[in-house]
Image (spheres, chains in turn blue, yellow):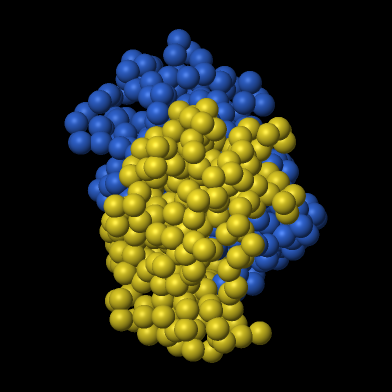
Length: 274
Length: 274
């Protein structure tokens, strides 16, 4: 299958399994080169610092990535799981924990049809506020699972999530951006959400600006995209409500292309501008 | 060691590890008899229904409990982990999932010193609101870990958690109750928290009433206890703030004893009334 396993899993007593006490990364690897590698390592280190989980060295991670991906033909997604390991008394971590980490690479083909445009929906689930965990790609992701369980219609490619203020946060597995008067914005993720690596790169590049928006504002924006570091950029053609009603439509193809033009090179994907 | 293992862990692709997509139970077993068994099974079934995870039959669970605990001398704690199993596309569960479950029994001695009274502290972490998950003993418990990591002083036995409204929710691993004018109250857990089985039994018995309280109210209450189905009832002698200041003290031993008198028989523990 071209699937390369690291260790075969975790023990019953691993805190990643017991409490979601850990983090993960999914990294696009093209021709053996990990895309946005520095951003993935930086996010992992930020999470490790905030959660108090010590991490393998960047070199050890890179070696593991290279070994796993060397067995895969073509593009791959490298997934890494780091847990706090075993031990402690209940929720209290051990004073000296031995983190457990493992990884796997699987062959990957981006869903290029979605680069042309998708239908998204607004999720019914409201993301909870937790500043202590916001931004971290941690393992306690049951909210994302519950949001993604809301629909099975394959014509709907992604679901958008709001917080209790009614402000847009992210998609179930992608970040989100909208365009107003030629400028692209993305939510700040201080209260909830996962700080994606492509989002970080686009913020650093000055292409994205932090802002806030609700669904009314979103429906009046000039364009909306969802994006992540594996799939690239999916422009929204339409947004459905959680009850199936049409909330908004967008059709400014040129605007969408400007976002892809700036974002896709970070992933080695085409800009799509003709 | 008297430890009995079920299956040795979960695979890399198990959704319990990947996303905290599952539930657990910890059940006190005394002389081979599981305490509050019906309540543990009921909570598991409620969680399974809400998360869409199908469960082993009650008989299969009971057989697993009996097999695991038969190897342990004296009292035991039986821990069960049920995950949604493997598969799906990212957060989307597979249309037909094969849940994975496993268990372990470990010897247990209740911390009887804490039945005499404890010092608790108010946690800095504020529990997030998520009605879709509130009450369920699910595996996405990183908030509890983060709260429990706030202190290491062994003289502090438990931490109390508030929500964003400033209302008391629970301890890091125990439910909470307070007494006003002879009546005992506990939070409703509609927004957050784990609905403990001893709490459920005491509600059913009419000994507890749902109410709401903030820290100011709590400090003026006549007595406060934390409790769960494994450790029994720990009366609060004092509550410290997250910065170490004394917030409140309680010393009505007779009131504490009334709670233990009603709760401890559910666990086969002594009522402690002289």
